[in-house]
Length: 424
Image 1 (cartoon, rainbow, N blue to C red):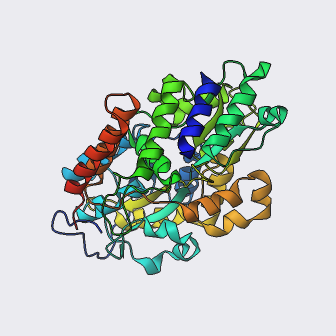
Image 2 (cartoon, rainbow, N blue to C red):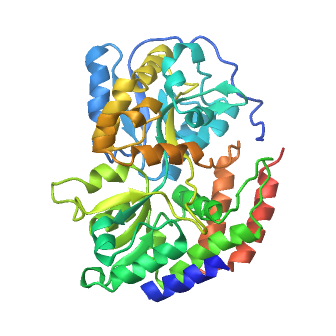
Image 3 (tube, rainbow, N blue to C red):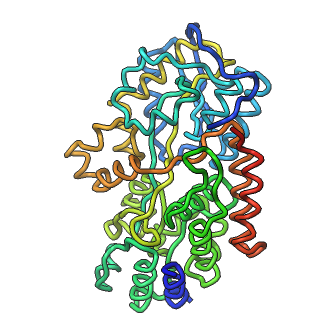
């Protein structure tokens, strides 16, 4: 099998949805003006204060206070869910991961959004709008999108005489050749996000999709107990066993892997677009400035498939000053704000035309392939019980990666668990 040959090379190289809570809100007038709060994950870009300051300077009576939640997506969701379950008005605008929409809408934790008052929707990549909908209604507004990309050391691949890999086997060969160079001695081959949190769900899904499998089929039913899914999971498991993926990567979330890549410890790194700007900083924090580039994720027999990422802004059902919250979201969804955010943080915008802007393409060469990646990306399951579903995926993947379970058994158990969580 092709995956087996790629793993041998790696070893040698590196040593439908459900109803909940009675249904979502039916929507109503968004009323009330005054100060609001914005609940969001930790700002790793450092640019959010400038964005919020731009709003505050224009709206002194409707100032936004940023409430930074944990760096981990799971930690962010937990705090937002707790506040919502307790009907607290501490958060006005919620920065939701794209996979949380169904859960928050079905539980009546967020307000329905009036489509006709958000002109930015017509300019957004269609795939991003779908992530903001539940049962045909809009409950959030796309602000950033996201697609996984393969960051690689362009300087070392050039010196080794190899091209960016399109398959896992080609990536293994590239590792072998680079590590034979004096500059590549001791360098890790590949890493992604493998700690037991949402990033593991993403990386697991991409491995499955990259081998031709699916986590949930088009019919809305789980389908992970398949030869294709097994090939994808075995790629990751055997890469950990061989050292192709450094053992430390079992603790990697986005930031841990980013720092490893920027410190020159990794040849390849699966990461979101935001890393591009940080790895390009000339303040001494990155050792790979001018030495790296990006390519599509590799797969078993050709280019892989990214998991669709991104963030949408929603209005808490328990917030005061919802009219101000809606206007703040409209402000942040504008082309001007999304362009500014892209240029400062390299985060992928939802605004489609920005990907085709020649000036931005010159500054961010990955925009064209990133747009294609987002348009072809596979979403994670859009289900009400997403928290339980992602926890089950993380448990199964982590058990396999840490050799607690054989990959086949992990997938069989996961199929049973998902079947009980995802009902039609």
